[in-house]
Image (cartoon, rainbow, N blue to C red; front, side, top):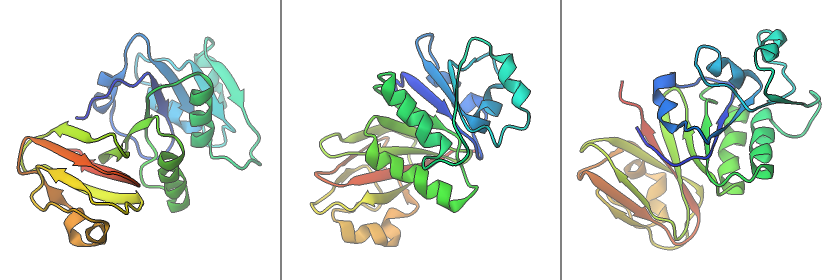
Length: 214
């Protein structure tokens, strides 16, 4: 599992990983934000949200809010431009978040999936996304991604913003150096051939996608 020093965890709706995939990210200093039905992820854990935000149209029971009297409730109308996940990220920004982990939002409506993916181009402090099936880590210019993984780990790359300059890779079975290959099979289901991989870009934004080992 990927570990980052996230100071803020956002739980959102959609397919989510089991708690054992994210509990290592929680510290006594973490700010926990639940976006609408993301609150369901916390119900059977010992972790309580500090903030609950959304229009609450997907909560299975609004009385669930009463279980967390210490949480600040941020209620928004159903008619709004932002998704509940985006509202949660904006709230995290206002609270001074430096590193955000997003948990949930797997599968479901494809328009919601596109909207969440786009957040990585707007908020550079969004550092990790855990769905039910995978771990997604953005790669930004001048901020190389360096990971320690088991050899033969599957990893894919998606160009959120297309790089225009050469890409540097280390530790991949099928290395690539330019953006043309990102539309080929070379960036889909790549694998690691070393225990440490490194990806570096000069411009654009890549999303690295690592499936959970089941």
